[in-house]
Image (cartoon, rainbow, N blue to C red; front, side):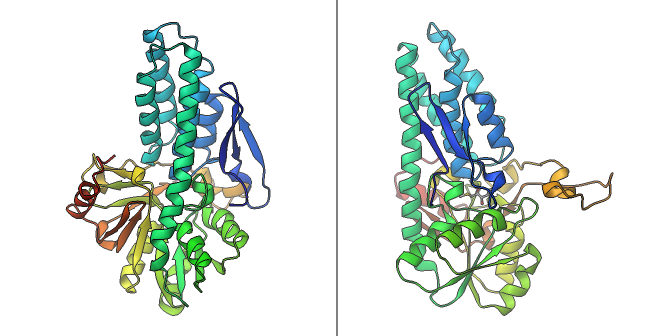
Length: 355
Ligand code: MRU
């Protein structure tokens, strides 16, 4: 990424600086978030977005929340911790990385309740910064593991934005392209525009262009024709939550892309860190799907394109069944043909307790 998606400035009384993603690609602007309410709002309105990035945002949100704490003892510290974390957790429901990061911060915080407040806050800031640094390393690893799956001399297709803007840096699905390019592979990427909020055209096209990757933007409804006629050899997408059987929630439209990929014999890969797995749920039916305002569909970006009063359905995510997924690239390795046996077995084999 040419710029930092999210970072902390200063000490415990500092602030979190994010790219205001709603303005891209026409304006690259940073906003400084000084309290937890601003962080909640930034997550809700997708100023900071993408599963790993909102996990990092949630962690910094906890640090911001404690700026206002006046806790004088362990009980008051616990009360503030609960209030801050449940507030931040209410911002968006689907990406499990948010809950994973908040839980990690909570776990650290519980060991700090007897410390002076200042020292506890310093430790929480260090933990949030560690989550950010780890995410950078994880994304590099995802790129490394995924790059061999890019077929040389052919096209790939991606949906939504799973790039540096959706993570601390480098991305998940886009990391695969970035690494493949570094390795000298020749390929081309079709970018679904991703209605209604256009993360594909506003963000993915912007990132790929910046990195000099040969890319073509298409409307979502062109994907079938493109897969049939334009030598698409692979699909890579990110994920917001992956169930124990490999069912994967990602941006609305991903399920459709997976069906098309299956119909055209194109391998469909999910690229995600292990913090995106939710092994507590057996399948995708248990993934909470965020529904967003009608306005995103009827008057996206300020122009009314539907009659007033029309009923609207606007789910932000859908679930791709594991049967449509050729593999899930994680920082621990590739899970081929994920299902209810292979996903838990993979975590077990890697001695990972699961998320
Ligand atoms: O609503 P968004 O823009 O937060 O949705 C983002 C996606 O669906 C991404 O594909 C997903 O979070 C993976 S990001 C590495």
